[in-house]
Amino acid sequence: MSPVIPPAWQPIVGAETAKPYYQKLMLFLAKERQQHTVFPPENEVFSALELTPYEQVNVLLLGQDPYHDHNQAHGLCFSVRPGIKPPPSLQNVFKELKDDLGCRIPNNGYLTPWAQQNILMLNAVLTVRAHQAGSHRNKGWEKFTDRVIQTVNDKESPVVFVLWGNYAQQKIPLIDTNKHAIVKAAHPSPLSAKKGFFGSRPFSKINAALRQAGKPEIDWQIPDI
Image (cartoon, rainbow, N blue to C red; front, side, top):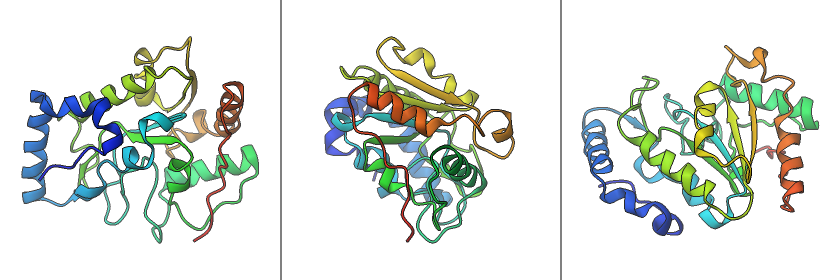
């Protein structure tokens, strides 16, 4: 069994599944799941697409890899399941959110409420082997997610692309900057947060760009669970 692209995205990126790179990727994944633990579970690989249909995407937040420890990844970049302690990068996101907009730091790192407000929370690589960061890079996922980014770029109405860190910013050539807004900063990881993530006020910038495009602002407050 391969993870299934959600119906709303089928007409947009469904053609990718017939391409050799994608079929090779699915064979690789099937073998990995036989021999190792892989995150997130198969039915959550496309959670970002499931929660934010193509027509509704107003913001695209790009991450790199899923988290690679048990019970963390559930298919949205930066997000962890309820009951799991937010990892350091996400803790830094919450610190900046508090400084930027005064949002209370929640007792969880479950970011589904953001996805439900038309933020496509996409990782560039959608799976990972347990406890081995980056283990599924360069296997084909990047081709697929680049295609997703390109289709979002093709939308008529303006989208806000949120690119934290050098890896995400390498995708700028895929984006028409005359039509869309880009909010960029250093990555929120402990290694780089002090070099330009803290103080970058990305959340108020995203809302300002949405306002300018005549779109609803995001309510960034994650509720306690």
